[in-house]
Amino acid sequence: MINRVNELRKQMDIRQEDLAKAVSVTRQTIIAIEKGNYTPSVALAIKIAQFFKSSVEEVFFFP
Image (cartoon, rainbow, N blue to C red; front, side):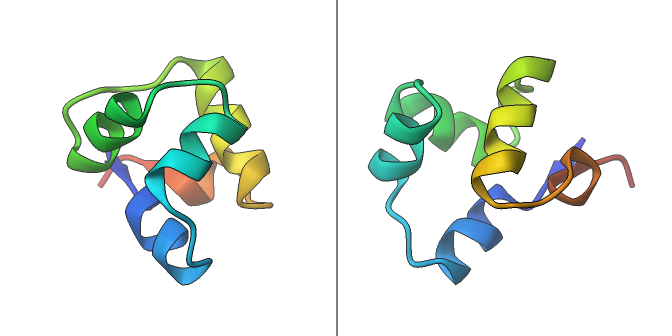
């Protein structure tokens, strides 16, 4: 799965720590998601998408 978390976070000038706090996970979880080493649960994917005011499909997708 490909994700745009890093891209969207940088566009909004948001730190990993701030995103992690907003979606109730650790900074390490955000790092792992951005690197593609961790696939978030559906609930977490929804929280992240809502944070970016995007759909889940716009943030997480398969090539």
